[in-house]
Image 1 (cartoon, rainbow, N blue to C red):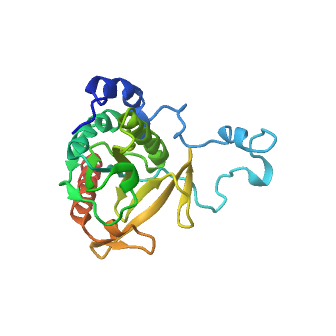
Image 2: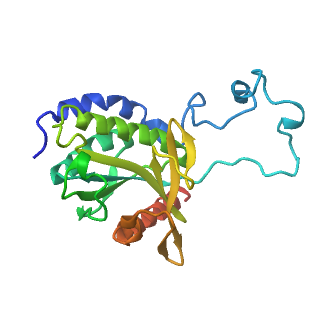
Length: 245
């Protein structure tokens, strides 16, 4: 059953700020936002003493060094886990308000590779993925994780003590060569993004197939999700081709 405390009006209200800030995820954002390219003036706050970079550390033209460029945009996705299949559908609503229209939805699959979540979520878990139509700058992954954490908190409010975490939502993105996932947990293979969020390359795409790495979660390494990920990758390529015409 869907918990009684989860009514649509509450979820809509609590995620309205996410919808208002969705433009941060497009890569085409005002110069005052945190994703705008850093300039020498903006670096002043990050340099000891408060001054902008000068002297040997200052950027120079024609210095023979690689210059910063905007990254290629990527396909944002979210993986959801719940013991209640209905919650996997219900969670799509606030995710759409946070990240824009969904363009791809996976089948509901059994999540049976680990018992890690049993204490918080119960047994007999299900997994579903969704991806979003709007391509995004990969630099917004930490912001995306913050939004999914807020959505999770809405679902957890008033949840029974036996299942304090009704749904788990993890964002990530598909790029042509890899799948990257966000995590709040540090480890040797994860890179800190900011806002308490880390990123890891979970799968690589080589030789027309997804390849696992030493640290890849067993469910991702199993190939069970490859069909969805390949379709998301194909849509990324198609969207990029359309935009470049």
